Amino acid sequence: MNFFVVEDEKLAADRLIALVQEIDSDMELVGKADSVKSAVRWFQNNAMPHLIFMDIQLADGLSFKIFDLSK
Amino acid sequence: MLDKIIVKQVAKGIFFKFICVNLIGFIFGLIVDGLTTFVYWDKYLAYSSTAGLSLWLGNEYLSKCLDRKYSWFEFPIRKLVLRLVVSLTFSTIVITILYLHIWFNVLHRPNLTHFLEYNKFSFLFFYIVTTVIMLVLHTVDFFRSWQVAALNEEKLKKESIALQLQALKNQVDPHFLFNSLNTLTSLIETDSKKAISFVKQLSDMFRYMLNRDSRELIDIDSELGFVKAYIFLQQIRFGENLKIQINIQDSNFYVLPVSLQMLIENAIKHNEVSSEFSLVITIYDDEEYVYVSNTIQPKILETPSKGIGLDNLKTRYSFFTDNKVVIGTDNDIFCVKLPKLNYSDV
Image (cartoon, rainbow over all chains, first blue to last red; front, side, top):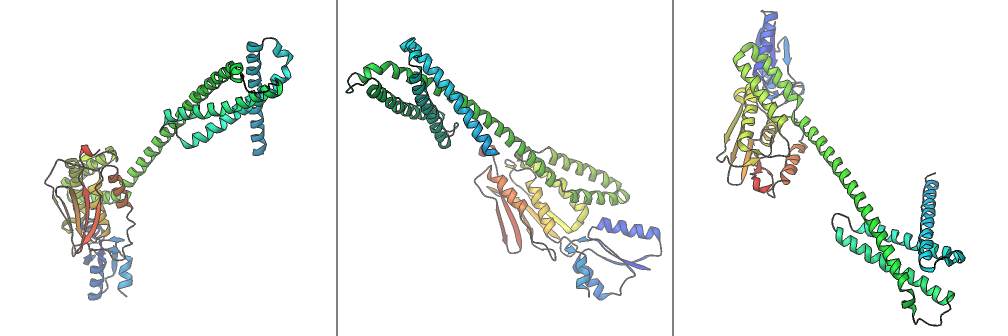
């Protein structure tokens, strides 16, 4: 299983990734993004991961905007 | 219901005044005319009531009119003199009418010869009584309005303390605290040494915010110390994505506490801070102003700022200086100019 992390604070992202892999060491991180724009770009160019973790307040706006822009 | 109470009160007041003026009238009569006063009691009653009541009520009304025009604290002497002049003039008119009536209709004198001579003691007595009563009323009034003023001042003080508390609550943004604690959690696991200095800087920051009176000034070095603690915390969160340059030449001026930090916080709040678009904030000064500027890179769907924080800052500065806080944008740069303050300004 693979997963993707959307989080604008590097420390929080690192901690989340560590927590996930602590629970299941088979979890594979396929990428991370710290803004709405970079997340949208990633989703347009890559296969959809199995699981996505999203913070709400991102560097350039709310992460809900990613759903609108990725249609 | 209310009307009834008011009518009752007015009636009570008039009755009290009626008794008073008649007492004064009879005492005056006893002094001037002796026991014959009791023979002519009906006349004394009539004169004392009409003259006394019209004097009292009239003077009271005139004082109230004057009260509305002049406050005690702006013109205390002018008010006292004006009150005396107005009430003595009014009293002279009332008393003269009364004595003219007695002169012609009771004493049946054909003309005004000897009128003043005959009545000079009565006039003198009236003037003394009126002046004494006026002075007493005046003193009572003065202390009463003083009391009201003292009460108001106390009220204002309380309000200002409440405002201060509110300002403090706004300053200590709960979001900021939770974000910091969140960062701290990660730091404890990854870099416990950094976590220790993080806690120290956080506590320094809160101590500074809680100890400052928002109405006082703070020297630029202390404010910069606080700003640096704040930047340290934010840079742990944002890493290289947040770049802040401080270039203050002069250390001999004052600013309002937490003002520089608020401007940095605003810049972070309204702009994108990401690996792709790092936010650059610059703090610098010239002869008269401190500048806080940042690159404009608004967030997507940014709700327009209400500018309450900036308006507050402008108002707070306006208490200390005539120089304005200037907010401007120029070529993708947002910049706020804060006037440098000196203690001589205050």
